[in-house]
Length: 103
Image (cartoon, rainbow, N blue to C red; front, side, top):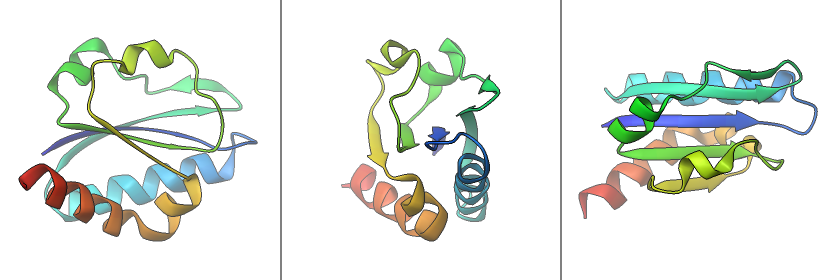
């Protein structure tokens, strides 16, 4: 599966990057390709390109704030979760996505 994600917490520092790492690790552990954009205190980093979004099977929005440039994601199948869920249970999130996409 090809996964893309965006992480963003209220302060845009630690939890944004903790969520990124957790989602990346869980996806790779389960054998998936992944690219994660962060929207934090320093702005957008590792921005998802139109090509990334077109190739994606699913977009995970792990966010506690309103994201910038949301219109980019209109045509992408997505799931929205709190940052804390991404940090605490990224593996469970990926597993549920797999199950939904398989059915």
